[in-house]
Length: 387
Length: 102
Image 1 (cartoon, rainbow over the protein chains, first blue to last red):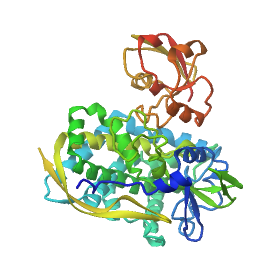
Image 2 (cartoon, one colour):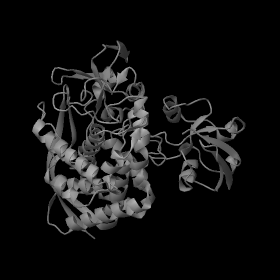
Image 3 (tube, each protein chain N blue to C red):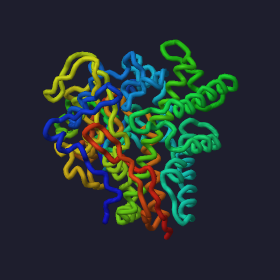
Image 4 (cartoon, each protein chain N blue to C red):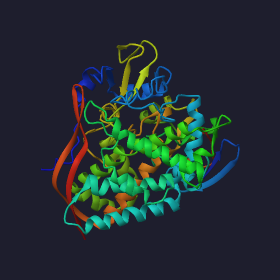
């Protein structure tokens, strides 16, 4: 059976028949938009479907209104201020395109793959993906490698909600850590992201502690589960499709399109919310002001109106307008880093790993009202085999 | 071989020569400012948006439906807009001028 790595599309029927679905979330229900066209148009229209409203944390699903006061930046800021923050950050977050950054990333991932190749069995989420993600984050923040040990020690669930109830204590581990690091950087400025932000201005004003914190929370939280899901799903996929890995070994120039296709198929972040600012409609469905919609990237990526054979992983797809990194103004700030991680991983796996065997899996199923979606794994044990 | 001229947002003119591949890849390989090509050319990111000079529209040809749908929602798009990852380099496009959108 070749189905342990499969991610099915629970949205298909609703997408075709209605174009939307519903879920409740702490008594603040969400209309989930499912069609590629609607998702992109809605993401584009940041005035009617806002991210930067009064209530901090409301566009996240499950809502973080009750557990977070710090506004994530630029995520929860709309234009025109959004552009000022984004312009400040874009250069830093494009550093993964630099050869020196790529070389360091390659060394990190290569060492980790060697490590798992020398073990009998590996629980990939905890002992591969979390480590890889945490170590790579030290490059994005330009902080010492040793910091990754702290982040790894938090485990995978540090920011993750367990079902409906959000765990404020767990979130506070991260928020307190970031507070400490900002205070430290203010005392002893270095060349890390905290220091760079503390030394920066937006609209002629120095960034405040709270603003730096908002950027750092986004950087930590936005790139944690998402990257871990993408990495773990990749391991599962290539375990069941060794020929694809061998094809990459033969033709490394496939890597770019393979990564885009895997990211389309995985959609590591299922959806993201917006708050509706006026009575409107999407696909002939009336939507009231001050309610929430979500942009379902995972569903849009399987829309047969755009993608042929949407449920097949096809590395030969030439056009691949997936929305796994969002779309429009608020598209993913960490996408360059994420893509570079994935491209590097695929190259190293193809070069070093002959095959992988899945021993057992514990799937991570998200409950989204009428839909249940597998987004990855809580745990998956794999044996990595050398050449 | 084809010569392709890029006009960047600071009004600098860069002329590059290429034989094959996409115009986006040529621009990225030579560090043309404002062409990022984040998705590597699969038409998912719109970070290679250019305006084709009116005289060259015919040479460059039409955008596909997927590209047109993407451009409809791109910032500052107009009738001269293209995503240059979707323009293949060949002698047919020798001499074209592209103004970088970003």
